[in-house]
Length: 203
Figure 1: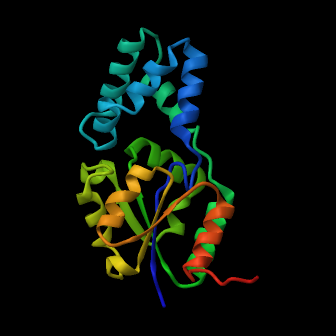
Figure 2: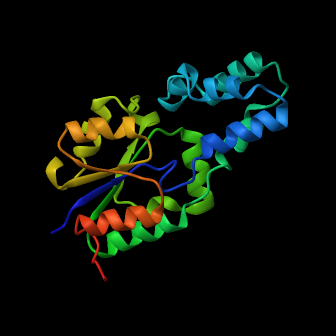
């Protein structure tokens, strides 16, 4: 049976680049780590991820708050380059596609980061479609963004599986009837996918 498998990107398909970027900015500019994390993951970060403020506006607020001299391009690149593909997750995506499942993404992401990662890794070819927060002006865990990705699915919610590393972001998917997997690592994900009969169990 062809199923729909929906992947979060940062922390699943890619490494947790925001966490790495927080470490880099903290060390590189001498900013308090809590101030960096609070800004990237707070209200300004949400506004940027949903396309409500521009990249220049976002980093202008950051440099003012942190009292540092740095360009938007410099900081944006630091954040984007902190993401690297999770090789195990990429392998599983390819195996799922080879098994003829529909593969979608659901990602709180910025226009600039998507462009950077696509240029460097060409990751979009591994997905059939998906939803980016900056295009729909919504972010997880707003139930509406899950409804938007379900609208792209070939299957009803009961035949969809959503994978995310953040438990709070799994709850709305489960409430809509999707099966959910809390991602910890690629080995655990592979076992869970086999348990759901999405991949052949070779044991």
